[in-house]
Length: 276
Ligand SMILES: Cc1cc2nc3c(=O)[nH]c(=O)nc-3n(C[C@H](O)[C@H](O)[C@H](O)COP(=O)(O)OP(=O)(O)OC[C@H]3O[C@@H](n4cnc5c(N)ncnc54)[C@H](O)[C@@H]3O)c2cc1C
Image (tube, rainbow, N blue to C red):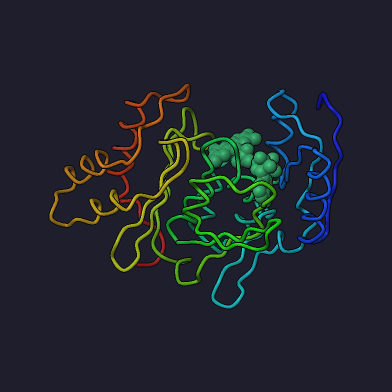
């Protein structure tokens, strides 16, 4: 049970959502947007979140789009992970989100909720990082287009919400790898999860589980693409170039994460899927 009362709104347009936000905010209320609601409800039940007003984005048509529009795949923030799996419009994204939670939870969890999650994993963002995807953000000051790289590293401004993600069709069918290790099975919070693709003979790679937020690193990519270094040394050197401190928590120690990462980077050489 959620131990407090709150107002619930389900707007049918971006403009209506922003109007509700602005009205509630002016009254001094704490407002949160919600897509799938699984994290908001869990946090509220557990006493980690209190809120006066919830704005459910599922009624907004733009947030439910999942289709090719010209040269882009457009993914609405309220599209569930299972819809992404079933559509198979983006094989690397399909493979990645299939390992998030169980099938029943994936019927509720949305890509927008995963990308904006307060938990650090946000694995759905990995395929978007390596394809230079763009995030469409709406807020009180209008519409912004932001690189997914920025979305991974920073929080949205008060009142803004993620509406859509756009991925160029040129990047959807490239050879890819997704590898993940958890404590017990293929599904669950990652010790390390990585998504990589090969474009114009260069590897692009992004990681979750290693740091407080998912990231893609140009320096690590530089090492992995350096043909002058032998395979074993390349993996060692890439790990040494990680730009951040490796996470050390109840899921895995820093050293164990490093060990798993080494294994996954070695495994990557033989794990490529798709064309090319
Ligand atoms: C059983 C289980 C297993 C899980 N395993 C994994 C895993 O392996 N890997 C992984 O990465 N994650 C995992 N998760 C975490 C899950 O992906 C996140 O909790 C995710 O936030 C849930 O999505 P949702 O749509 O229900 O989010 P919601 O509860 O709707 O929202 C989550 C957060 O995002 C904000 N938000 C939602 N939509 C928007 C938007 N459009 N714009 C701006 N802010 C928004 C909300 O305000 C809230 O702060 C797991 C969760 C469960 C329940």
